[in-house]
Length: 317
Image 1 (cartoon, one colour):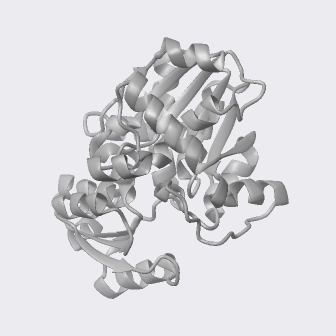
Image 2: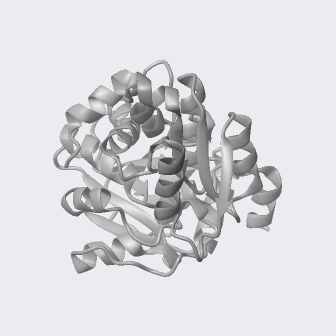
């Protein structure tokens, strides 16, 4: 099973007019600090506040009328939950979402607000895939996983497709890595359009499962990460995403929670945009000098901005 540039282009046509074509921001201060021309794709301004709506809607819109009528299920730490809930609402059906008990309250409330039912579990003791699959099977729902699905991956890749269409040639693309769906789709699009581009993933230091896996040449599990970047708290890459990223990703770099905080503060104070911790990791990698040497023209995908004011203050405080 694979995902191609054509799949990403087909997804772009399917989500057009439903997902936002998010803006690309520039900052002279950022360029001066890092020594490169940086183009920031703002998926924090996507519907539901994150890139996840692209893949969720692309996958859900391809279901049969019978599947749509029965309803959709998903498991997620927050952004995919909201994305599937909104996709279900757009398609006139229902969604049941499995979420960790410690998911930020704002993400739970937003998921409920889109009309979904939320079921919780303990992320540190429970297997969300097994629980989610059992939940979907028991209720006769179609499960849309957060990244282990070719239509989800193709949908996520539309963010990179739009970025390159807007700004032209890039020397490097820097992308957050959780389960690997965003970077797999982004790399598929980027290398399909620009074969010479370097695709660099960013993980939190305590959640380096993809980096370890790529270095080992096989999927490696790590303890469930305890990091402020809750959207990147995957303990092992997906099988499909890993098979794609092995071929397409050039490097993975790591950032600390303090570096993520600095990047969130920079985005807020200097770029006037709110970014959640997981979305800030690519900016953190640039500002902390983790990418060396840094190419001349760099694209960055800021993956989300789902953080409420109280949590934002707590994280930065």
